[in-house]
Image (cartoon, rainbow, N blue to C red):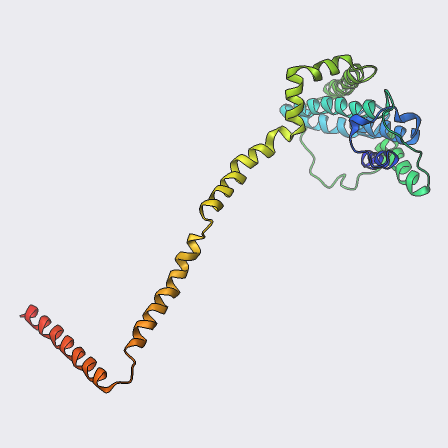
Length: 276
């Protein structure tokens, strides 16, 4: 929540600029937002001891490990590692380096009060708040001891700090390595792929949109509607054929009755002969 509000403050301070690659050096112009980003990012990356994220994420990883779900533990640890990288990547790109966009300081209690409350709660202070669901959810059966808990804590701390170090090495300073990779053929291809949402829009268009448009084109004359419309047309034709015989002439009616009688007699004779 702190990061979301801080991101909104950054966009407002930068005149609604939404492209992080056009930002840089903002810590001088909006230092309070920078502090919120540092604390919020540290909590998200589970920075050890100082942020509430360390205590919550450490508890989650410990529960997964101690209950025997080691696959969930390693997946969570890998997620914590990558979270640390991309979180501090954002902070370094937006707030450090060369200033690329204008930003102005934001004032007012509606700005600093909610951010200030979340900033405090994102520190280790938040770890002392009693959780509303504590004691309600069923407890997991733990199979690991205290030594294993310290092992998990060390791994969690290491994942966050190594991610931070990698982000600093790649995105602080001139970023020569990142720019070199981005300017290479493979880097441009990956950038194009990622900027286009891993080509999911292209795949969706290929599998669903284009087949639907093809069917719509083939059925542009609405053959189904014409097939259904055949029923009232047949009824109308039958009605028109029946109305021809209703001409009000006595000779026509007498001939029709006689013809009907002959046909009926023929049917009766045919049935009698076949029965015999």
